Length: 55
Image 1 (cartoon, rainbow, N blue to C red):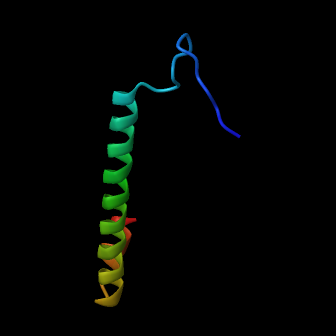
Image 2: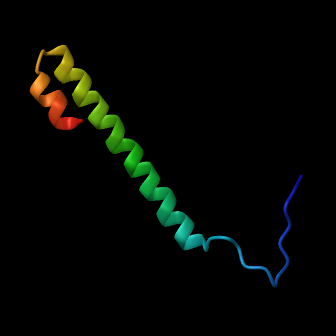
């Protein structure tokens, strides 16, 4: 199934809006993975105060 748009229809998101949202998603994923790594390291090192601080 394909969706075609005519010249009179506007896209749901402008290209620049999509680009901004896509970049924000990539940055959020990166930050989340870093926090997960820090939490894992804190658990491994026996530092529960850091685990509770991150979560």
